[in-house]
Length: 156
Length: 156
Image (cartoon, rainbow over all chains, first blue to last red; front, side, top):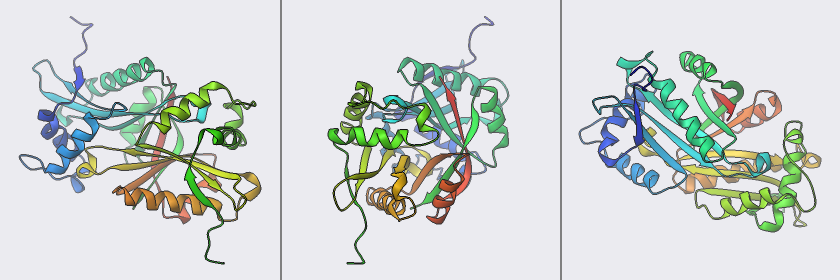
């Protein structure tokens, strides 16, 4: 069935946390800031529970035909006065299993996220990508994003 | 009293919405996307009610000694698995009355936001600034932010 997406999206469950943490850590930037153990440190589960309890935060996993978690992303729906009170969709922590890059998994995930944000009435989607991730920026440009902003960050 | 801040921060109230919309519209980018009327269109009040009802979104106004609204900002506290489950603070829609620029109002507002985010346990603060706002980027650099990311956006 050539029309069928190679992945299925569903909301993350507690039992997906370890797989998501592995995806976050399997990355040049993530390796230095995540802690992979079995089971993962409790701080990850506490964060998962906060996300699961918040209707404006959606943590999603992409699963392959065998049900394995091969990607993850988070969507945050932000109410605001700007743009005549339109809700904004923020896309974060988009990760695809390194073994499956270039097979349309990421595009399927982000396309799903855009449809979900549209369905919820958002008029814009934003994301921040580390300046070193030029591949990611080309990927998002192909999906219609423009690098119109400077993303600024500081530790607190 | 030279130690006293020139501004006082407090959570925005329904009666501040018109002043905040004027601040958003008084801007080269905002002028094209906001609608200023008296009273403002109902979409702004609907957005205000959503923010006021959401414990993870904080819309703040800065007031001068006479109680006039001279600035506004929004803080969103985003739970996430990244960074070992640390909560992220997103700073948005920072605006200062054009007549008061360069008097420390913006610095006072952002410093307040950083303290509030720290108090709530956030380890990082992020923001996106349109590439054309080079003054804003210099301002945030002075406050310790680094333009380490590309901010990408698309309409839905």
